[in-house]
Image (tube, rainbow, N blue to C red; front, top):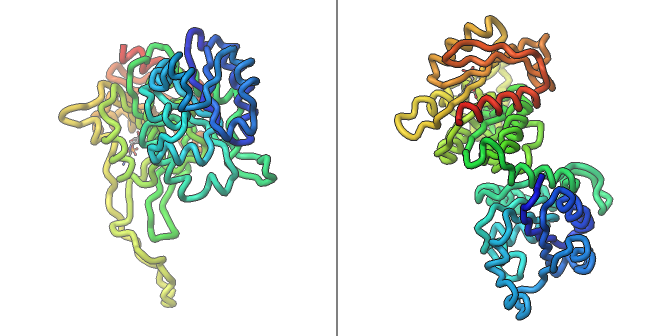
Length: 398
Ligand code: C5P
């Protein structure tokens, strides 16, 4: 529910702007007050009259409007909301945000706000995949901007791929996560997720079968309970949840760096399947067959153990540090030993033998190992495991 919440909705100029009108309705149905801001380009797609009629609010359009400045200055407008939502966030608006431009009302509000900002990108697939766009996205995510979508699918321009704006109800869910009042409100939690990719040479890498599903579900559940979540993810096959700060990494070393720079945190949950080893020296050129019939010898070196490093931090250690243990035999014994070895508070242990179908699947059967012993949970969906674990975390952080 969003009762009493105030949303400043900036509508960018793209064909997905028509969905912003439905978004206004959906947000209002849940009790939110929505103040729309239309860019010049947005007015080519939706009219101020529709936005005003659906929101039952004045629509803001112009930076240099004497009347608006007299009624409510743009600085005040940028701060009067609980959350700023940009939907659709066009390539142009995102570039302006990443570059810190302030040359129209929307970009100025985004620069001036002291509130969290959630963007729902929407653009042609090639624009989305363009290196400039991906650079801007990384900058925005690094600045703490929250994202939802885009989805993959048919596009208005006739192409297919990622770039479709999330559906209004998906955006509403991300808004609810970003504004969630719950037992974890005010707590910062770092979650790692997904596999890591360790390069062998420029084209090959060492990976594992982790999909990132459990870490993603957990981050979503924690955000849903009000936590501010920093989600550090390797190249996962499931998309990251909305309403969290996403930091994308490839290697274990990058993951460690991202985690330490995200601290301080109240809790850190290490759900990533980090590669234990990386190449002692990754080759700068593709390794070629040399005609001798002898395969190359790959020399490995141990990766930093992120869980152990954070668990054993001499100062600034999160109050609760949780590791995962994916085992294929004597799960509880191994996981109990792992908890002691790494110095973490809890271990969430599971059996990933191929016959369980857990690795890459939708279900999980876990045992939670704490200082009071081992508690085995029945097999359930990864979402249910995430919700139950999030509840335990909320209770522990009190
Ligand atoms: O030792 P093992 O890989 O089985 O431990 C699994 C736990 O340790 C997981 O929580 C995983 O995220 C974490 N881990 C880590 N850094 C590593 C290896 C594992 O944080 N290099």
